[in-house]
Every structure is written in structure tokens, then in C-alpha cells.
Length: 295
Image (cartoon, rainbow, N blue to C red; front, side):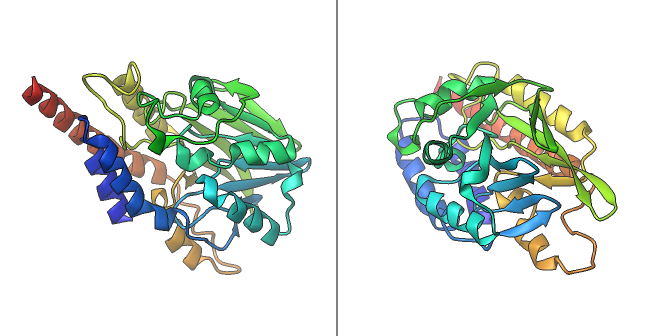
């Protein structure tokens, strides 16, 4: 986890032509974890984890079929299908595919699964062009970041609802990490309690350029608005696009029959995002200093 975080922080500072090779180096560091299988499990209520050891993918069971939240790298699509089957669920029952953000590590299986199931792909409106083009914003010609494009059937903005059977998710626009970064909120039953769940899109700087020629217009303001919004939300269960966001492996190991669900941790979102905000300020300062030095 720390290795991945360190690699991301290093890459976030790069704004020169050396970035292409650094992306290759980064991918070499993370690919093993990103493509390592992880045993699928019932995370809480009707939410199941079907991702890898390094990339989170979720299945939400409803009274009228399944909702798939994100995928992983293209080569992990078969692994995700196997995980769904291990849970006694059927890929053919996927009716809706939701995206948090249009980066290759969360979109690699969309085209294949959409083709096989006929599911509707729903994403933030500012990420539509990226998903249908299969590229990274601000780095459209970098083949290292390409992914199989997929047609978006519906776009959402702040407060829009997506309903399938007895489940409704609310879209929250949380841009920055990508232009159309969308976090999804829903309620699950945990024993006799109702728990609010947030699938947080992401708030890391990662490969994004914040200054000079930013990855997308208004990116700094987008990040700041997202941090303020998510810190203020009342969330019982924080989930995210990578397991390290919410210490998935540790919490999974703590799960025991009859014991409180360790994924229920009210206020974890505010603590996590406060850390992201501090890192963002550091990265912004470093990128600004590097730009000033270059000029």
C-alpha cells in the first residue's frame, strides 16, 4: 500500500516529457497487486466485493438484478466474472454498470461486460467523452493509459438518482481526480440498523497536473469543492476505488459471525479526506514551485 502511495505521489510531481517513462515504471510497480485475485465476499448487506487485491469492484444485489460498480484492468475482467460466479450470482443478471471515474484501472472491463449483458452504463457527465474515447484527460495520446472505450447510456450530475428494484443510489459530483468523478451513496441494512454507504470516487492527485497546463480546466477548485463536500457528509461505511482507501484487507480479516461489521466506521470519510486535502496542498505547492523554477 505504501509503495503504491509513494509511486503516485512521485508521479503527481512530474510535468515534463519524462512522464511517459515514469508511467511505465509506475505500472510495473502496481500491476502485480492490481491483478492479484482476492476472494470475493459479502461486505455489508447486499454489497459484495468482487475486485482484486489492489482494485476495488463491487456488486450490489437488488430485487431486479445486479448493479456493477466499476471494473479493474482489462486483463482482470475474467477474474471479476469468476468472483461474481463464486458468490452464486450471474453475470447475465447485471442490469446497470456504474462508474466512479474514467481511468483505465476502473474501466477495463466495461466494454466486454456491457456487450455480454446489455447492461446500461451510467457515469458522471464530464467523464462521458473519456469513457467513449478510452483515454486519460490531458494525455489523450498516451497509449500507456488507454482502455477499451464503452458507450455511455446515461450521464448523471449532483443529486441524480439511479434505481434498480429495491435499491436507489444517489450521485454526488466529486470532481478533481477526473472531471466527472462521481461518488455514489446508498443505504444498506446491517442487522436491525440502516447504514449510509459512500462509494467515494477518489481524491488523490495521482497523474494529474494542477498548474501550467492542468489536466482539466478548474481542477484545483474542483478538488477543493470535493474535499469540503465529502468531509461534511454523514457516512457510516466508506468504500473506495482501491482497498487502501478504507483498509479493506484488515477489516475483512476482522469479520466474524455475530460480531459488529468492521466496515461500519462513522466519520472515517472525514478523517480520510482531511488527509487527502493535506497531501493535495503539498502536491500543489511542489508543482507550483517546479513550474516557477522552469520559467
